Image 1 (cartoon, rainbow, N blue to C red):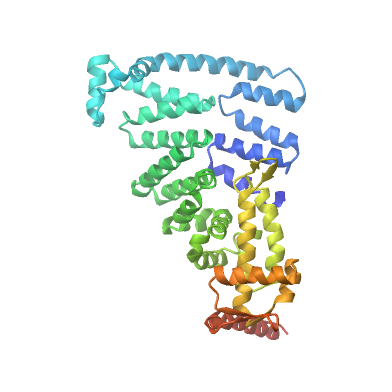
Image 2: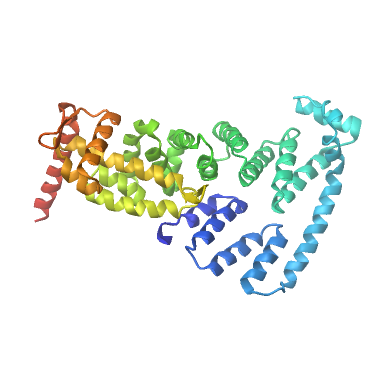
Length: 424
């Protein structure tokens, strides 16, 4: 299912460190040759300070204990630069590690800067060194240290652009440490700045929103309230515009979130509308499943797409997360998606057909007649369908409040028939 892999579309909108978890997932799933993944990792690492990691991958890729001289030289350079930055930032770091001194800080940045300069001879050069040191630590893969230093840097920074850059770095570090609660707080803080800041151009603001949505995927598909969060964010007009302008592939994740979130069924109609609008720019089995079911009323097509949906989910780094339960490994989102998708199919089927043969449904569901009857009773109850089960005739008879859906279906068939006639 490499044809549906979105890594090449998503990676350009991520910090290079955030691409590593995606490559790890792809390597585990063996969607691509192992050598190809390892070469991609080395290419990413070449632009970071994670030289030891790059050396290990090089040894694994080329099955040798030798590494290129340029890697060895690069390691010496990184160690020297790290030591230099540490010395430059040492006065401020020493201050921040002393709790009694930190108590002297106030919410007023200008006061803090003046106080540091007057009492401790810590000026702009040391504050800038703290930022550079934090950034260097991040590039070395020390995400915990980087997160702490970037947080502290922002308490002194008066440059809005540099402060925004530090917040992006802090968010990336929290994501890579899988601190989902803190990462969500940073995401919301970043969103507030992006929405209120006066950017040099609308295009720049659009790019920041696009980045934010891509980075948010790590959080929303790991945080306990993430499925509500992604729906709330992606359906906001300005963010939905960003998706429709230059990130159509994000529809996969929005569609998945709507399908698995039973409490947000009210967004289904709006989602279908967007999928229809963007069908020529982007489609995959997940969006096509919804289109088959709610636009074309093609139940066989929907069931076929559902098989493909499962494969897409299992091979997607954000959707295919595995969970160990005893001796079993499950993919919770896959299970929820299939359960809700099948419910969608039969709810829609029940709303279109006035009389449904239970035995026919039992055959399609690979159930006994009694099992199918109980399943239908629960379906009618949970979906609040106006229906009665006639045990004598073995049918489900739908009420009259579904005439609008049946009318839509008849109208759709009439349009299709008219198009066929015109084609003749």
